Length: 66
Image 1: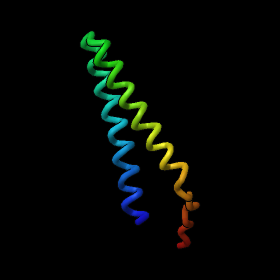
Image 2: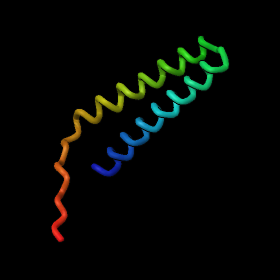
Image 3: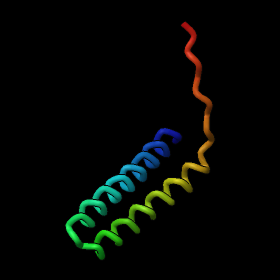
Image 4: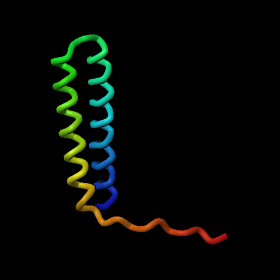
């Protein structure tokens, strides 16, 4: 279960990153309306990922003893 939730979170973050990159590219072409829409989608993905991340218990990193 936790693995599928982590995968879902990773996908949300990937969608947000892609939308941010797409918005930047479209903005550079002068299509500011499309860039604004893509930026809004990126924000939506980011907020959704944050909501799910905040509900996930954070485990401290395990130390490695050699």
